[in-house]
Image 1: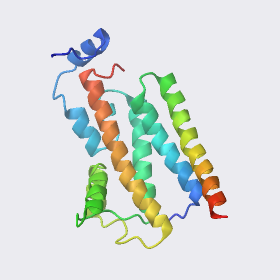
Image 2: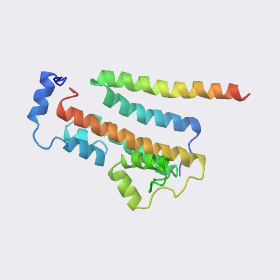
Image 3: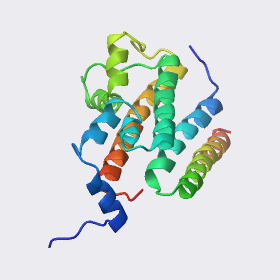
Image 4: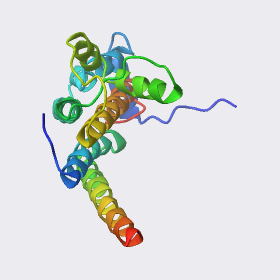
Length: 139
Length: 59
């Protein structure tokens, strides 16, 4: 049975008034934390999201956290998926050779978790930007 | 390299995650703030409670 989307008139008209590629905030938000909200002119939200996600990723690296590079088993595959959520942060950090080769101290284990969770939070933020863009989330 | 204590790491983790949860899970700024504070308190509170439980179990 077909259902109608749960939208308010104001949100629907706001989303309809924004032209362009509907997935742009989603992709931009994934590549650069907060960029999806910046595109939608949600400046404070975008800044807070960017500060939180970039800060968490940077702290993970500063704690000597490891960046997952391969997928030799299921746990590494999950870690790699989490890391990839960081978008350009992950790609640039890998290219720059940041992150530890292996976890050798307890703090590095926490750092590794910080990096993975930052990636997952970035995916949540990008989906939130997409929902704002489509009008599924009113404001 | 930074070397935070276990509790400092918990507080930092809770701060970052609560900020993102608050912004993405609620719609108005007031509700975002309230939900963010609620998440932060739950993260820190549960860490403290679980720490005491593990301490008492280990004795």
